Amino acid sequence: QVQLVESGGGLVQAGGSLRLSCAASGRTFSSYGMGWFRQGPGNEHEFVAAISRSGDSTYYADSVKGRFTISRDNAKKTVYLQMNSLKPEDTAVYYCAASTMQGARMRYQYVYWGQGTQVTVSS
Image (cartoon, rainbow, N blue to C red; front, side, top):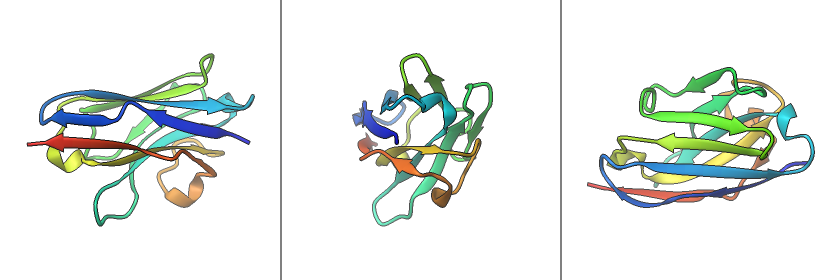
């Protein structure tokens, strides 16, 4: 089993940056593809980014491509989401999740979820 804890959210002005972290417990972190999702006010969960087990492959939603970067450190059992050029529409609760698949983009493909961290981007 994997437990996930996100951190790094907060309030930032449009154009600013934030770096989210997701720390995992358990001995099998490197066995999972990891992903980030977000849920804005009144919206469904939206895929943001995913990364393969080794970190060699990354996948992004079109809405964040070129602005966000996902990475992982398997030794530290942590996955990151660097968010640059933030926009008000990026405001959401951000969740990290673990999947037995790599590059998964659908919520049902993830088996473990963190509790989420709030990101608010002011205009």
